Amino acid sequence: MRLITLFIAVAVSGAAPTVWGKDVESRSPGSWRVDTPIVTYFAGPAMSEAVARQMAEGGFNVVWCGEKDLELLHRHGLCGMLHDPLISPDSLKARAKLDALIERVRSHPAMYSYYVIDEPAASAFPALGKLVAHLRQRDPRHMAYINLFPTYATNEQLGTRGDTIAAYREYLRSFIDTVKPDLLSYDHYQFMKGGDTQQYFLNLSLVREESLRLGVPFLNIVQAASWQPGVRVPTRDEMRYLIYTTAAYGASGISYYVYTSPGHEGGIAAADGSPTALYHALKVLNPQFVAVTKELQPLRSLAIYHTSMKEPGCEPLPVNAPFHPDPLPPRDEKRGLMLGYFGKDQKPTHVLLVNLDYRREVEPTLVGPGTLEVFDAPTAKWSPAGGKQAHLRLDPGGGKLIRLATIH
Image (cartoon, rainbow, N blue to C red):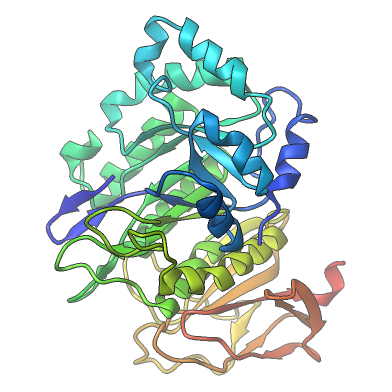
């Protein structure tokens, strides 16, 4: 799961998963869908009553498991990403054991997905496509999960050619065309002790582009630990930034690297299982991600604009944009604000405004094309803004969802 390139390394991550459990039985063949936005992780402890309780209370809803853990997860309202050595292209050579596993788990109410592989090269896609097709044929109601490399993987790792954008776009499209996934998932880690790396928004934009082209959801795996001297442990405010930027780009899920794993500092739980400071931060933030993303799920991600950020993949806010901050952040502002536009029929009706400065609070005023309402993520309730302007207070790295009052 960890990819090291220069000074960077890479890896995989209040919902209502019991709704998924009930819904599984009513789904028609081939109709897998996200339902409740995914909150998960990469690398974690063996499952137990205490671990399951901690994860459920922390706002996680899809967790790593073996077949024997499904009943435990069901008792705690969790859904399982099944890890089993039989879930491999090699198992297609003698399918009886794989098919028996599928038959045992496919009707279990806690079953959510089959974990297949992390960060495959393009050369592996044909074999993975055959496995995914077989899993879909035998159990169309549950996703086959594959996590992809980030933009800073080398051409040799990706198995494609060209500059960063060309090679990565070819990698994504080859995966989509060959494997035909139900979900796009990738990991990207940007927080180094020497400063942030510069491809986080580029990676988001490229995956979002392919997600929209294919018409499938995507999941962003973000950093929650340090694993080598040059990598820093994110703070609570940086985690908020990761959550709200992920939602603003239209993701349907978020995952954290790591929950807990030897050789890692930070994470969500310590080696003895005790919750870390990040756990307590995510216990508050995870339900906010779910609440905001559920509001956006019926809509289409239309555009992403940045008022100040000039990293690759950042598109500037156009003149006369229908939703815009007034006044704009100062021209010399390095991070500024981000606006994720959402709506139907190419008409933006919602905007998720994000403070990209994870070190300080800001108080922008958002102007819209009509009377506005503001969504309170902790309570999942809308309230009037008082007109065409919404006066907001954004936590460091935080965001607010605003909509036109006339759409409902």
